[in-house]
Amino acid sequence: MTQAIEVVSTPPHARRAWIMLIVLTMLTTAGMTVVLPVLPFVVLRYAPGQGSLAIWVGILEAVNGLCAFLVAPFLGALSDRIGRRPIIILAAFGAALGYLLFGIGGAIWVLLLGRIIQGVTAGDLPALFAYLADITPPEQRAKRFGLLGALSGIGTMIGPALGGLLAAVDIDFPVFVTAGITATIGVLGIFLLPESLPAERRAREVKLDDLRPLRLFKGAFARPELRALLVGIVLVTIPFSFFVNNFSVLALDSIGWTATKIGLLTAFVGIIDIVIQGVLLGFFLRRLGERGVLIAGILTQAAGILALAVVASLLAQPWLFIAGTLVLAAGQGAAQATMDGVASNAVGPGEQGWLAGVIQSITSGIGVVAPLLAGLLYSAVAHSAPYWLGFAMMAAATLLLARARLTTTTHTNDGRLVAVSGDAFGRSGPGVA
Image 1: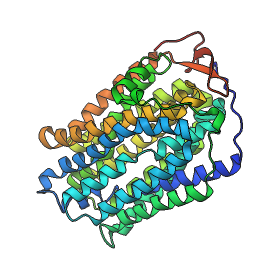
Image 2 (image 1 turned 60 degrees about the vertical axis):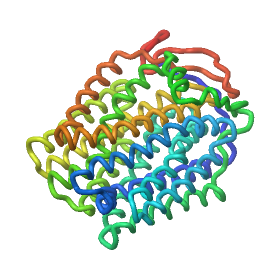
Image 3 (image 1 turned 90 degrees about the vertical axis):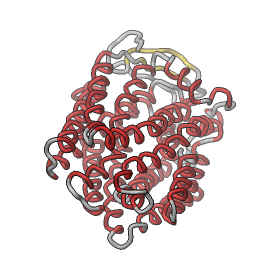
Image 4 (image 1 turned 90 degrees about the horizontal axis):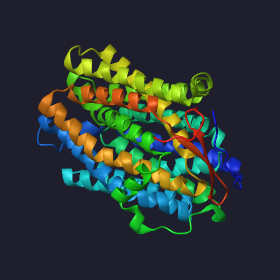
């Protein structure tokens, strides 16, 4: 494979930076996933009736996604200008306030306000991923992104299990714990997190006119080294967003599970992430290459989505629900880490935050539409409808990325483009998507 060679200087305090990145990643994902098992149960207290539950869950997540969609490009570009550390701290305290309001509740509008605040300050994980790119040589990024995914898996294992157990005490308790976790991230960022982006490698300015989402997308999708990958991200993210925003409702409706059971299953998803991304991904990359891992991961996700469609329509069995969820998680972990590594290698050091903002804005935009679409399809068409549509989109993503030619680029320390070299998936010669 022709690899991008980027001149990356080792940042000061690199060892401490890596340790803090590990801690913050686990805390971030634990905080976000503590609330997953209890979300439909909290919303059910304020929704007009159980028949509207899926729609209201979708509305809350869509509002959150819309705010992140509008703000994430600015936060990503701002991190290229002022550094990653301030954005990580801001996002953490914003999330803490949002979760605190969600826990206080009292009315559906308070829940909406909490999700708005959390969405406006969304920027923690993109900044953390840009941070990783800052301190990692290009040839190690796919593996390192896999390791970061495994660390996220640890958080995903701890968070839902903790949320499910705490829900047995009080249904709001997990939300307050999440607020405390995210506030802790902010405090750790202030006192212990070194900056990863030296002043000489930062962008010189942030052009607000270039950060409008539609213009941002036009510019990103116009770049041949990113186009096919970004389209693939869209096709894969929508079905996974259907699953994330709907699987608790499906578990409640189809197999009658409690918040505790949902939390424990989500914890096993975290274990799958750890095994796939932390242990097996390096082996898979050596044996299959980036293209092979990416395609295999998407096909595995498609199999998981198919199993959930069967649960929703034909065979409402707990074992099939569990199997579909874990298979989907295994495929998503392998494919996501590989996509992150390939995308990161396609841009220079001064664009890592911009790229993270682009991808976050794409996923946030999907987060506006997908929860509403999943809720409407689930309620108005059939419980299985979101999953059948997701399966078709996974198939389309497989065909696209199996044929894609993505380039990697070579940059100097100050971000200047030196050369465009071979295909990111291992084929030689200049590529276009």
